[in-house]
Image 1 (cartoon, rainbow, N blue to C red):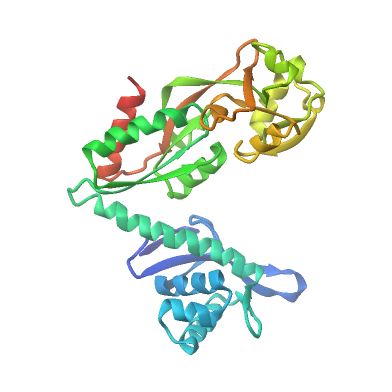
Image 2 (image 1 turned 90 degrees about the vertical axis):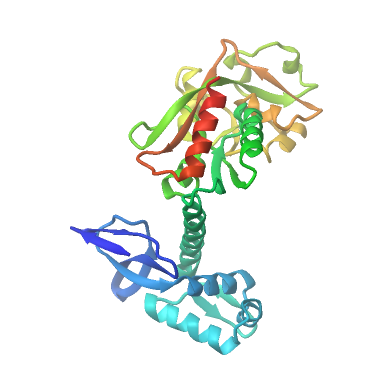
Length: 342
């Protein structure tokens, strides 16, 4: 179902069909029409009702790179699948696939459509699980995002105690930096997130959590600086650094040295420390991060030295403003509030 108000379109999900929002973009003098799937609430959109089955057909072909293989997996004939794909391209007004003799590849429009189709199928599956949470039974799926900080060590206690009360509930746990988690909250793909402050108050409801994480430097355990109990920011000037790629974090680090980020010898950027730690272990550089990023995956040859004066970041439990939770989600939210606020 969908409704049009003014220049914006609001769409909902129906079983069997998804309204797909498309926007016509003219490409220069060629005036070729390309349909790009974007979020709802944007002007100049048209609505194309589309069978979810067709989305899954397209995704299978994109994954396999071969129409015959995809047809076998989907238990349909190859001619039927080919016809459905051509109908889809005609409906969208753009080519999604480049057909070779033995394989198919995605066009630029096909790559974008694949991304949107994955999101829509995922949202539909989630909607079905959410509706199951309204039938009085505490079941379904709770999705939560969590940054890699000391919060990662506290989350298991919450999940363990909630699971003991409601064993039929399943969990989707998404690990990312703050930007990645907020993006999924915004799109409805996760229910709640544990984020590092600051958080945009206009977009989210949130509560502060009673723990903080400490900033410092990760380095090899045999590094001369590892003998220190703490580091001044001046100690890292000139050292090859791996830093978080969020501009707000880099600006914060730069403010500790007078606001000039050019004084930092930045070797690389990361969203999580997972793949940076082996580089640090090899002695390729130093990692500026919170201590919790190392404590959740300790390395024998790596250590963390905090900054002095002490620099910390707080945490919040956040969810999309005005979001309506089902019974299972509401119970989990109250449970996590109660545990973290003890």
